[in-house]
Every structure is written in C-alpha cells, then in structure tokens.
Image (cartoon, rainbow, N blue to C red; front, side):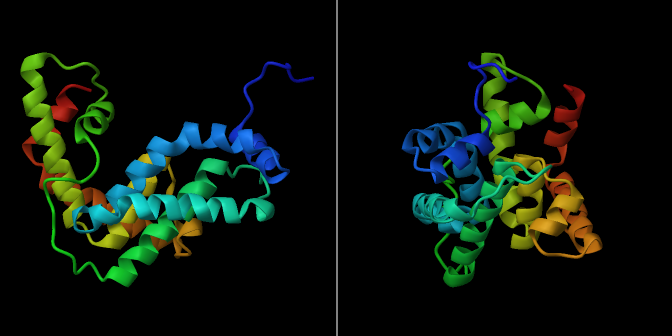
Length: 205
C-alpha cells in the first residue's frame, strides 16, 4: 500500500487534473515550466526568440486541451508526452514563420551557463572561470542555432528529455535509422563547432 505522503507522480497529477483537480495542474506546471520553456526557446532559435513566450503558452494550451485524452502508458512518462506536444508546437511555428525573421543573437531567452556547466558535470565555477564558461555557453547556443531544424530537434529531445533513438523515432514518426542519423549528425556538428570548449568540458568530467 503506497504511503499517504508519497509525492504524486506526473502521471497521477495529470489524471487528477483531467478529473477536475485544478491544483494538480498547478503542480505539474511548477515542476516542468522551466524545462519546457528552455526546450521551446532553443528549438525556435534566435530568429524566433520573440515568439518563445507565445509558443510556450501554446504548448501548455495543447496539454490542457488534451487532458481528457491523456492515458498513462507503461514505460511512457508524462514528461515525454508533454515534450512531444511542445516539440510539435515549436515546429508548427517554424513552418509558419519560415524562419524569415531578423536574427537577434543577443537574446535567446536563456542563460546558457547553467546548461553548459550541468552538462560538464561542474557546479559553482570560481569567479575567474565564469567569463570563460559564459563564452562557451554562448558558443554552444550559436552552434545549436546553426543546426538544421530536424537535427536540432533530435538533439534537444535527446539532451533535454533523455530520449533514446527508439524514443526519437517513435515521437518524430521516423524510421529508426533516420532518427539515429539525425542525432549522430547533430552531435558531430556540435562537436566540431564547439572545438576547444568541448575539450575543456571533457577534461573536467
């Protein structure tokens, strides 16, 4: 018998919300707001940064609209389901916009330092290292921006949500080999683009 004070899972919260518990949605939103926001902004890239808030809200509206259809599936997390919805919302906006907006490389809507340091397995860098790591983080975002949209989506789903190649294929409706190729090409291009910064990241692991 589960403990009464057990923290409810995302799946439990979504099902409670679908049954009319508005507070359950508030908990879900609080848990995943930051991760979904970063994911959407990085998918849109600098050219559509100004539309990040709108697409982020669209993703949550889609989650709300789909609440009655949500069913918890063995091995499939609510987070995976939500990230897939957010992916579709961002891709829809990219298709409509045609990525013809003026780039704004000064504002991608997220601080890359935390993301980069977490990936490097390094916390609380010393003051003298912060400038270096911020430069590395800015470079990483530039490298992500340069990726073709399908490769960037595959990388972010893999990195932000931990999607395996099998997950990518299922969620993007792609053959397994195509999903694997997109991820491999994305990783290869990022590795080449990051250059010396990547060597430093590997050295501190």
